[in-house]
Length: 315
Image (cartoon, rainbow, N blue to C red):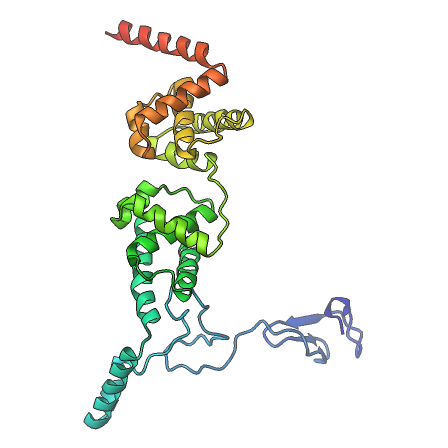
C-alpha cells in the first residue's frame, strides 16, 4: 500500500491520520485503525549489546575508517575496568591473553599502527580535513598490502600519500609545507609520492594554479578584489597557454604579485616567496612573462610611477 495515496481512513472515512515514523505505522486518530504497518521505521533500535550508561540505543556500530589499522572493526580482549571484578587467577589469565593478542599482531598491523599515528599527527599539523586523512589512509593501506613500503621509511611514505591525497582532492598543500611538517626532505617525499602513485596506478591531474590563489591571498592579507583580480589574470594566462611547462605555484604567486600591484595592495616578492615557497627569481621570471603577454606593462609602470611620486611627497 503506497503511503502517499492514503488520505482517508477506509473504516470511518476520517482524514485525521497520524504517521508514526518511529513505529512505521499510519493510524487513524478518529477510530484508532492501523491503516498501514509496513513503512520503513526511522526510529531507534531498542536493543543494546554494550554495557554502557548511554541511554540512546544504537542501530549500528561506528563506521569503518582507513585511519584505523583494523578499519575500526577490531576487538580487544578485556579492559582495565573488567579486571576489578575478577579474582587474582582470572585477572592473570586476562592479562596473559592481552599480551598474546599484542604478540600475534601481524607485521602489517604493526606497520599500520605506526603509520596511521604519524598520519594523524601530520594531518593535524597541516590542518587537513577528515576526507584527506581518510584518502591518505586508504592509499597507504593499499601500499602496505602490495608490499610497496619495504625498504622505505614509514614517515616518507606517509608524507608522500598525504601529498597524493591533497592532489587528488584539489587541496592546496605544497611539498615544502609537507616537508616542514614531517621533517623529511622534500626530494625524498617526491620520490615516495611518484613511486606509490605509479605502482598503484593512481591518476592525478596537474595542479591548477587557481587552487593556490585563495590560500596565499589569505596568508598575505589580500582583500577580495585582489584575489579576484589574481584569478582573472590566471584565467587569461591559461587561455594563452602561459602555464604550460611551468610550475603552478610559481604562476599563482606571480599572478598574486601582479594583482597586488594593480589593486594597490603591494607586497614584496620576498613576502610572496616566503608564503608560497617559490624563489624570488622564479616569481620575477613568471611576472615578466605574464605582464608581457597580457600587455600589462604600461599599466604597471603608471602605478609604480604614482606610488613613487606619493612616497616622495610624503618624504
